[in-house]
Image (cartoon, rainbow, N blue to C red; front, side, top):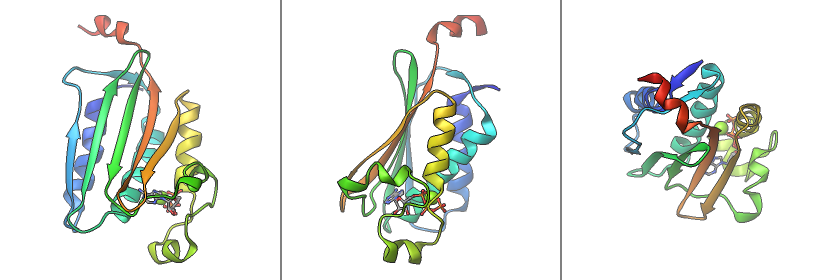
Length: 158
Ligand code: ATP
Ligand code: MG
């Protein structure tokens, strides 16, 4: 489907924001213009649901989750940042492997199967995008992904 990505993303974030019981704030930095991308909305919803649930799962009380969309040359870059415990440097790529979970003890207590990010990776790559993580232990984690975007097709929408 062709969708305005910002609108699509806002709706997903709103849904989470309405149901959070934790003391966590959301902040959003989005372009003002419409950004039309061709995506499988069910699959992208699943990707975002997992990344946002992870961010909530690992956020401390009083933490902030920051959402951003940036327009680059031939793609958009989406990021979701939290202020949680972080992911050790050596594990930053492994978290996208099936069933990989950073620390068995902490993960068991958090629940889940370790599949969420592996599925996200599969789906983003099926859209010809990239997904990766950056993190500072004890400070937080940012998950980034890209999606192809053609700024010139914008003209056809007016
Ligand atoms: P599932 O998503 O299947 O319910 P999961 O959340 O454990 O289980 P993934 O979403 O694939 O699995 O994440 C893999 C692992 O990466 C997690 O178990 C956790 O150790 C680590 N991780 C993912 N996101 C974060 C985050 N925002 N902060 C800290 N660690 C994270
Ligand atoms: Mg998960």
